Amino acid sequence: MIDEIIDNALREDIGEGDHSTLSCVPETAMGEARLLIKGEGILAGVELAERIFKRFDSSMTIDVKIRDGAEVKAGDIAFIVTGRSRSILSTERLVLNFMQRMSGIATQTNRLTQLIEGTSAQLLDTRKTTPGIRFMEKWAVRIGGGQNHRFALYDMIMLKDNHIDYAGGVSQAINRANQYIQENGKSLKIEIEIRNEKELDEALENGRVDRIMLDNFTPEEIVRVLPKIPSYIETEASGGITEETIRSYAKSGVKFISVGALTHSVNCLDMSLKASFS
Image 1 (cartoon, rainbow, N blue to C red):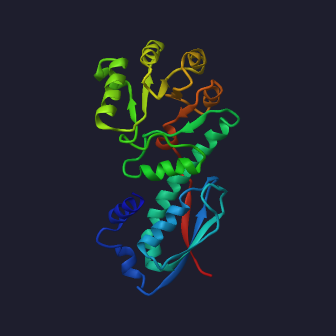
Image 2: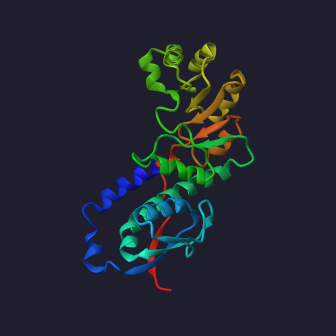
Image 3: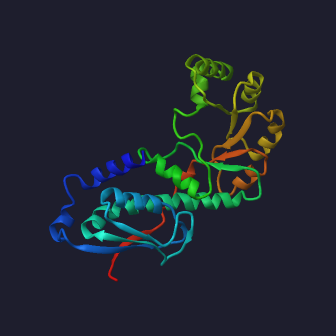
């Protein structure tokens, strides 16, 4: 999947040719460039950058100075890439685009994980990702210290509000999901999104779910309803959770906290790839 994303991104950017580079840089020219960090945060995407360079031109070499997951500041050099000048120029923007976004996600994730440190809650991402590069964004969440929720629609049954409404109710949705698993020989966990205490009671009466998502419940409401939920059912808080409120959710006793803003609302970490001469 990573190589498919890289190949597609290169086709999108280069097309029939990098005419700016082809027009002025000799084919035999060799060069060196440094990845310069221009802000503070958590670095992510170095391993991916290595893969992009090597996939485009296997003769390129990368001297890594700072690995993924490290704290960085303005002025740091993450790596030095050496090889054909044309190859460096043609891959420069793709590497920067991925690394800046991945580092922004890792930084945001790290900040939130620090806010819930000391509790038993675990931070999750969501499917609110950029189409086509979900793998990279969820990779960045892991680098930042978070965990991945389901990757896509195929690796978990997640019964959300619209599924419940279309199915005719909580019990109907749960029953049909379990029947589907049995009839199709699938090994999938079932999670159900709960909007209020009435729906929670209905889900608990049915009981055939692996996880309950308490959607838009306040921390106080979660504290009140958690004793109802048996230990074999995992619990997750979701919906409008911010830096200001996440600690309260973590202290409520819920096992997972999912935050879409890890991937859909991030500020990229500024960096640039600059030609250098030893």
